[in-house]
Amino acid sequence: MSDGTLLFEIVEALEKQGLGRNEYQLQRVIDVEALEQLVDSADPHTDLGIQFTDSEFRVLVTDSRVTVTRM
Image 1 (cartoon, rainbow, N blue to C red):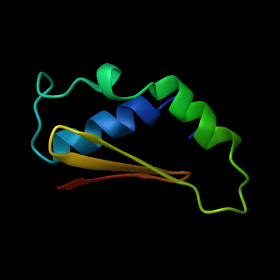
Image 2: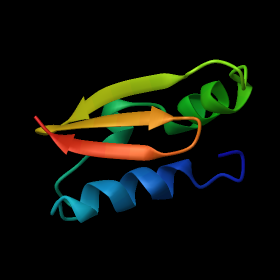
Image 3: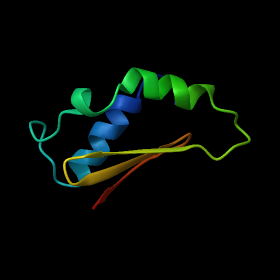
Image 4: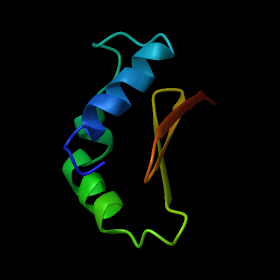
């Protein structure tokens, strides 16, 4: 995810779950730039999984995708 699209992937995944653009405040929940640096710097031979919650959704970020599930 080193091409700087992590924020867009998270937003797209949240919107696919039905959240409108005014219903989440990612900047209050997580530092997306720091998250992207962490994902990009992870050893490619490990299974990286970082999760956080926003509203009633759990967001899981791995080195290859973003998954959002309702809690």
